[in-house]
Image (tube, rainbow, N blue to C red; front, side, top):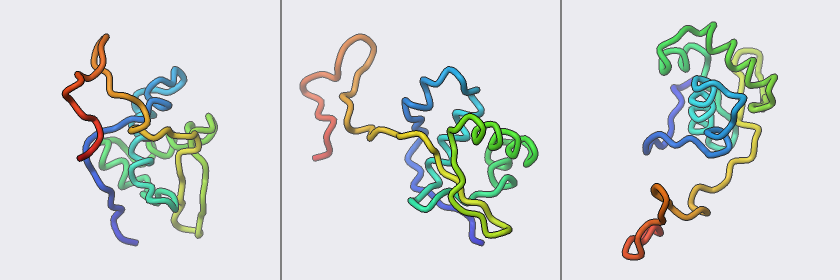
Length: 116
C-alpha cells in the first residue's frame, strides 16, 4: 500500500475536537491527523506511520486509537485482514460557515474572508 497523502495547508483542529473536555491534546492532534488523511473512504494510515509523525511508538498510537474508538470519536470503516480504515465519527462543521473572529471583535469590514 502506498504512503497516505493529504492536502496539507496547515494545522486545523475542528472546534468539535478542540472544545472537547474529554480528550487529551494527543488525542485531539491524532483525530485532526486522521481527519486530514481521510479523503472520503477513511484513513488507512498504520500505527507505524502515525507513530513516526507524532514521534511516539506504534503501541502508543494503537492505545490512543483504541481509546478514541471506545469514546466514540472514531469508527471503523473497513478491515481487509491487514489494513484498517477509520474515520472521525463525530460531525465536523464546515469551517467557512462561521465568521472569522479575533479576540473580542470581528474581522474588519475591509477584510473579505471569502475567496475572490
